[in-house]
Length: 325
Image (tube, rainbow, N blue to C red; front, side, top):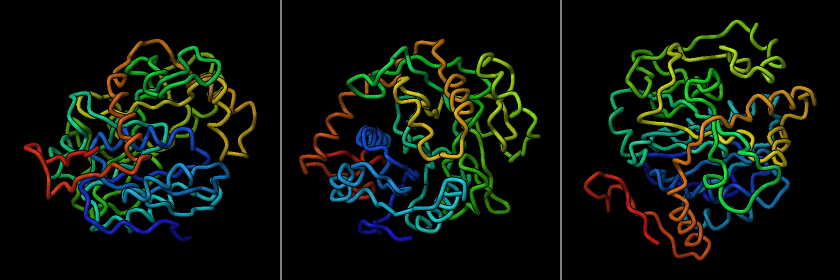
């Protein structure tokens, strides 16, 4: 498997890694938002996209921040975890931190600081896990105009069982392998922690909860997560310092797109998964104020007038790289 863009060789403090398929409507917003959080380079693994994703990504590749790697493995053949293992090798020595997140996941700090700033607190550790907050359709039947962060402002309750799920930001040089798309094994003597610095171990669940996934679709606040298999040992949901807004379903029109790479998933399973995750109990427009800045970055990248200043050469008092439009 080979990359189709020129490999990025410069050093970065924070990188983002994802596997995607036919995500062209969402790429610009996600990339720009990540840039606001201090992400300096992206490894994007293209899982056999057939839309215009490459055309959308071309300006970002030209700007020197995106590297695209062809990754045609079928999802059932561990496409995601094998891509993440590949990324650990590519980023070892190139990036101090790597965030392993999806295109529908927006990583930020509720403190208002860029994530890159916040991560300086965790440098004694090999990685930090970040809890989700799952957002639903907000009543949208069809895809609305505008940005995801503007249109979807309704979410599940903070401590919902499914929000115990996490993604990992890890030091590639101190990680061993992904144990799932969510959690990483780190080297002996190294530690994986929560945002509150609680030490984390990986726990494999007894799979009995998965038998309840269709019931959970109708009773989503059962005190179980019917979809997780490997969990962190710390089950408390904590999102005061680091948080991921997970836009699981978006509009009802877009829900089927969630399963485009899971062609072995039965229709009933798809319906149950979508119903379970379409949570709209809490109004929380926390990311709406970022919309203007996201649009500015997208416009500048597309116009070819955007550049990311090197963190080391042009950092402010906080040490975070500046953004030039």
